[in-house]
Image (cartoon, rainbow, N blue to C red):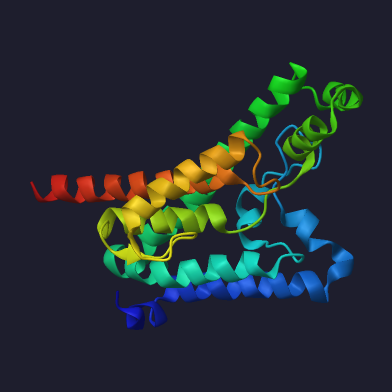
Length: 234
């Protein structure tokens, strides 16, 4: 992998800069509650706004500094290669479309959890049901209903998925393995791990389906681009 390419990627540099600026603004202008305004709420929540579908990708948790660090590091490591290969326009399409589809994956999962526990999609009715659930069920339901989504994870996962399409055998490290693994195999392991974590609630507060949705979206969007280019030449 040529890291020099990453330093010369305009879209990647601008995206990282915007994320850092927004993160800084969350602390500097804390009285405006930027985190709450820009995060993505469930469409059935009264706090939901259409613009949040895009803005949530630029907000990161102020309580977890590693959230933005890992996302920006992954964007820097993999984004430059994709931008160089496909150009700025297609890179931006993959990034934002993956982020939107990732959010949709998570919203569908959260809606499924909501309906599983209360057999309704009415938030006011579901709220009344909380008293009849055990503590673990309450946490799951409350998280699905009211916890907003934030972070570039879905969009960045899309870039990593696109990278796996172009460089499936490139070796990367993935925890807990102490040795490098081919990126495509690593993503398969990551997807199954995320799926298990989401179903069994092994890591509450993490949008596992957003990660899965982002990876799959990026992989298939870039596959579509490649197929289209081949058809153009024929």
